[in-house]
Image 1: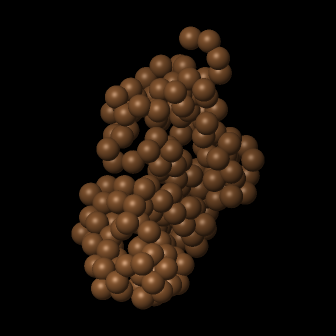
Image 2: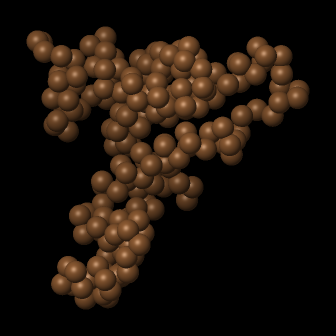
Image 3: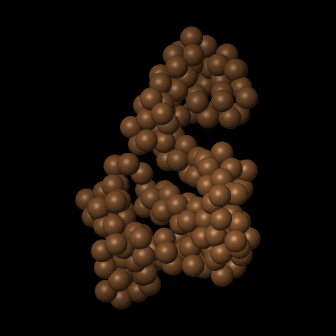
Amino acid sequence: MSGSPVKWLRGRFASKDTEPTALRTDREVQAAYDLYGGELFGFAFKALDDRQLAEDVVQETFVRAWKSPRGYDPSQGSMRTWLFAIARNAVVDAIRRRKVREGTGFSSWDAVSESSSAFDPVDQLLERIQLGEALERLSPQHREAVVEVYFGGRTCAELGEELGVPASTMRSRLYYGVRSLRLILEENGWLAP
């Protein structure tokens, strides 16, 4: 196959019939690295504030992805989301190793928790990615209602008037949109039932 790995991967992902189920080959790993490596590095660097550790985390992310070919399920989210979840775990591991190396040890240092303020930006980024992917799975009408009301600060009456739809219809679209969004997030394990 000629051309850049990125073009090849984008072409391969263009059709649901050819979307890969994992990073099985060197070419797939290289293409995914070309697409997401920079973003993953920025993500890791922001959490760790250490260039070398961030590079190690990106490398570890792709090694883990390559070693766990069954870990990626396209029906659960994009490859990007999967790689960011792996990267987050690798960041947690790197912080734990750094704390042990610094002599802090686990006796005087509570293991990195989900609520750690060091992970607030990291968790927020993952949540935005997950929410964006969940919103993409809504119907256009439901997505528009949810985005405009919850993120745009508009009322159902305002949105309905703009679209020429009764406010009651907009409230219904909003209700079913939020319900569908919650189900999508729960099905993917991104929200506790």
